[in-house]
Image (tube, rainbow, N blue to C red; front, side, top):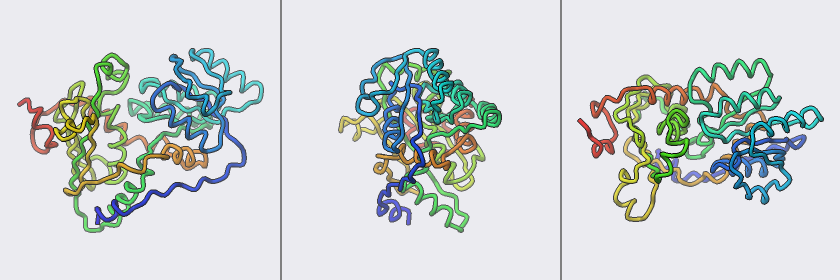
Length: 337
C-alpha cells in the first residue's frame, strides 16, 4: 500500500487564492542560501519586496526579482528604514527571516514590534521556552509568527500521513532515517559549526525531518541519543505510532560507497516497515505553497513547531548512551564501545 501510494502520486500545485491587495515584505538575511526561495515565493505570490538586509552584499540575484528593493548591510539602518516606512504610511505586512538560527528569536521580535507578521525559516527558535515568550509577544502586538514546514505540504508525505491515519490496526511502524550531507572545512568556521549558534547537527539539518515524523506518527514518548559529536549524531525515537532509528551526518566518510563512486556528496534514505519511502521529487514550489498558505492565514505557527523544537533541544542536551538497544545500522562503523 505504501509503495503504491508514494510511487503513483503526482505533484499537485496549489491553486493560489487571489489577494485583495499586494502585500509588502521585508527580508532579513537575504544573502543566505535559503533566502532565494523566499524571494521567489514573494514574487510568485504576486507580492512586493520593499527592503532587505544582510551584512554580506552578494545579493545581485535581486535584480531578477525586485531590483527596486532597498538593501542594507547594517541591521540598525534597516530598522530605521522600516520605522520610516511605518511612519510615512507604507505598511510592511510581513518580515521574512532567513538569518542564522541563533538570531531567529531576536528577528521575530523585531518583526512583531514593527507591526508585521513574521515568516521564519526552521528552526524557528533554538529553545522551547523561546516559543512561549514569542506567544506572549504575539498577544501583545496582535501579530502572528509563521514558520516554514514545507515537508508537510509534500504530496507523498501527505499521502503517508493519510495512510497512517486510516490504519486502524494499531500497529507500530518501523522507520529508518539516514541523512548525510557532507560539508567541507568551511563548515566548522562558520556559524553552522558552532552549536551555540546553529543548535548542532540535529537542529541544523534534522529539524524538518523530526517535524515530519512527529506530524505523521504522533508525539514523542522516548528520545535516546546513541552518538553525539560535532559532525554526526544518531539515536532512537519512540513515537506514538512508530519506532524511529535515525542517523544524521555532515561527514563525507559516512556516505555509502556507491554514493561516493557517483561523486555525490548527499545521501537521504527513509524506509517505512522495510520499504524505501521516496520523496525526492516535488520540492520545486513548496516555499511558494507555504507563502500562499501563510498569506491566506493558513500557515504553520509557533504551536506547530513546538514538537520538533523540543525534540532537537532534548537531543542537543542528552548524553550519548552508545550502541545499546535500538540504533541505526549506520552507527556500526562509528562504534566506540
